[in-house]
Length: 419
Image 1 (cartoon, rainbow, N blue to C red):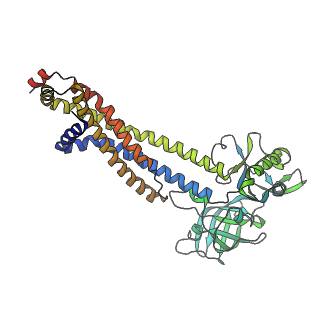
Image 2 (cartoon, rainbow, N blue to C red; image 1 turned 30 degrees about the horizontal axis):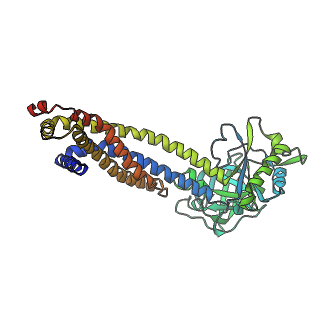
Image 3 (cartoon, rainbow, N blue to C red; image 1 turned 60 degrees about the vertical axis):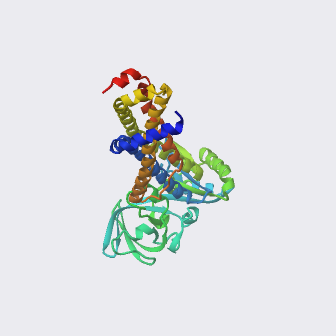
């Protein structure tokens, strides 16, 4: 019996039992759909974060002091120890190949008020005007604040956090410090597009952010051994190399300075170490974390494929029993064991292929819906269609091999006697 004839007979038997065939493939459909959905969602999440991180200047580096437990995770914000003095920032700025070095820390605001509206618990990023150039921030309106002035810059979500009243350039807002409760009035001088802050808030959209100058909003100081005076101290330094080709060299110089001459070297705790993270390293860290998460969730979804394989094996055993006389007739007219094996194996493979192909389409739809619901850009990996079909073939082979072998070993005389 040739291959085309076996496929024709297998397809005819599947069509004759449409409901049973559909229910049989349901386990494979659910399994493949779950895997494709989670893979698509993971790829979309990764693309969103990577695009956000890569949206900055490629020559930017992030200098921080992190504990051993933090060093394996991407640092999106001010999560390290606050140990970098103004002396350190000036020295880093003077290193060869460095175009700019800006500090970054923050102050907690218990409330932020605008006209008669108030929102609570906002984190105010304090930095210098050069921050927006280093971070490649795009201004929608206005411009950067000036040091020494009571001015702030908001990102677009922050302008909409007061209900029906949107904040515009020139409006005044009131910040109430969480520590001490002192109120500070500030004028909004610029509005920027949201960037990295959106990556960690996928469930509710981009996070509102307020940016303010260190002077006069930030007063945390520490004694600087090098300058022999009290200076402001920060949790992170953003370093911009003169061009992307100099990033590696600048990274090495920053590490050398921090380890040999910096105030931070004397101020940091023993269980903290310096980390100078480039854009490329940050992107690789994000990919590693998201790939691990996706693989874990996908592994759970694969359990459904095992259930689907068991379902195919079960229905193929039933099919062998139902077609015992047919097998006997086939063998009586000259069919070989290999022909019978091929016939039933093809039927199992077809069930697996149809289930995986349809499951891939359902999974793509599920991934699209999930990404839209969460607010992520859809990122699909086309190779998973091929993988899904391959999985269907493998599932069909594994599930059908024993029933097909059992059918091939049927004695034709006993089969013809079967009622």
